[in-house]
Image 1 (cartoon, rainbow, N blue to C red):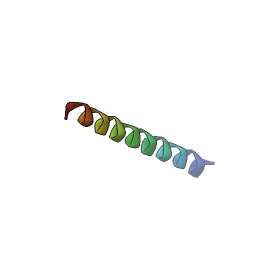
Image 2: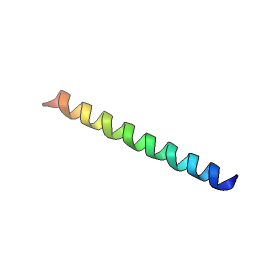
Image 3: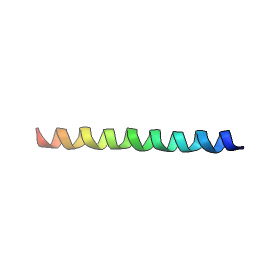
Length: 32
């Protein structure tokens, strides 16, 4: 159970990181 929660938390962080990366790329394209 603990491992499952830990993996969910890790996945959430990974998704947030991917989304922030995509937002960063979008912002750069608008600047260009």
